[in-house]
Amino acid sequence: MAKKTITSIIICIVILCSATLLFAQTQLKYTKKEPRNNWGIGFTYSESGVGISSSLFIPIGKSADLFLNLLVSGVSDSRELERYDIYGNSIIPNKVNRIFMVPLSIGIKKELFKDDIEGDFSPVVNFGVSPTLVLTNPYDRSFFNAIGYTQAKFAFGGFGGIGVNFRQSKSMSLSVNINYYYIPIMGEAVESIQNNKIKDVGGFQIAFGLNFLK
Image (cartoon, rainbow, N blue to C red; front, side):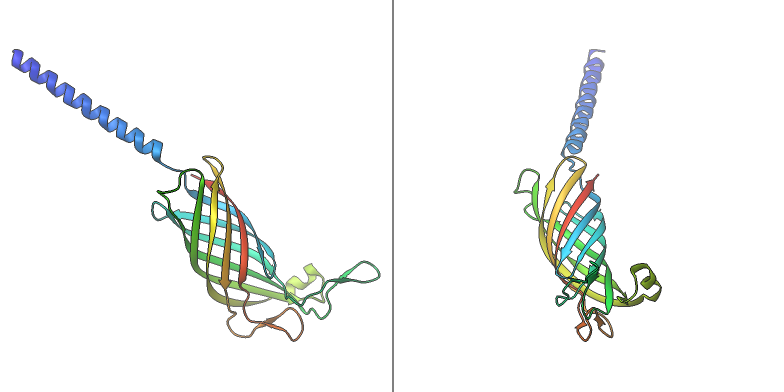
């Protein structure tokens, strides 16, 4: 009888220790789980214009995300010079078209030195491809009237860059990235200024992002 009692006590102790260890491991994993980028909004400044963007992030590793970024931006020519007439109206001499681009950037963003840097700061690299819709409409028509005369072209290229993430809280982070895009237009080039072809709507971009974590 005593042996059965001792055996039962030992079994209970083993079960209790196992349950305690399992619970501790579960709590440790939960505590160490770090919030990751889920989606975000951003502002972009580039050589040819400014734009707004929205991003979606899909974790593919401990320190890497697959991301999709949709940007809407104007495209200007470096030769554009804004002037004003006697009535105060803005005029850009020899401008023939307004140009807009809508690139969908599909890429991978990876945090560097994930296990070596403590705190809420982390450097990142990113790269990928960027299919792009390029829209043009005549400058000599008013903005809304010109929408009905919009023509579409397509461009395709890639990008790469570096940046930093600053985690502000458990639900939000800020990011700054410097990227270079190479996006040649497929087919005939477009014109913003008369007789000055634009064959590539890429270039350097500085992107500021507000990311929401989960």
